[in-house]
Image (cartoon, rainbow, N blue to C red):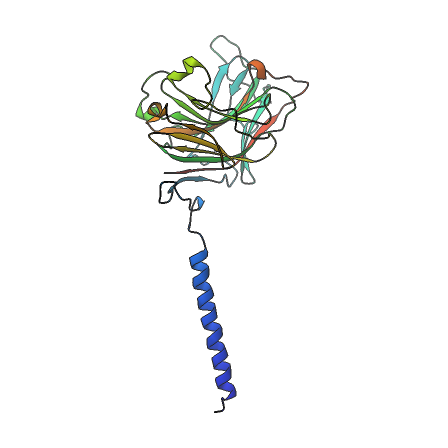
Length: 287
């Protein structure tokens, strides 16, 4: 039997079409499911995390439906102000800076007539967004420094719209990661509660095993349930606490802050010049 040239062409075309369909089906099956947080993540107990907050800091300003910048007179030498010098969004990043306050960017006047000498930046979801339990994550880079003076935080605070059980620290505070330039290779999680009276206790309310070199990007993760809080840096778990979980059974807001150091992290101006900036690439939450 002889095939016509037309038949050969049609047969080849049909074979190519079938191949395309098969490849498309295979690609659809192999491509991970995605949502607005990116690739869907599996829960350790089964099922997937559902995205509830996805912030990539696009545009040139904060999304006011989600974030607010802090204005606080502060204490000692530090205030928090909402200024382009302390809180800025550009190039897909949030930048929070510590600066020397001056006539063009002054700290708020205090009741005693004084002003702080330095100003930091802080944003939070205060009054806008909160969540009880879930997975919380931020990709952050803090400024490299060769001495004490800088203190940054990715942390959660009780949503006052739903009340607070007791005064701080009994009401709770979840510091997913605090970084101190006096400890340039560590991020320190801390679970503030009534256990604070006993100070830091490894594995209970804090950990010194969370490795995070300053000047590099790191992803900080909190997985929080009614019975347990787990913290990881770049996927490496470094705090797993179940004993304090009852303190945190209420909605919390998310905050990011560029502070100035105190105590043994008191700034040495000769070694740590200002401004100093904390960069945030993105923030995510799931439940």
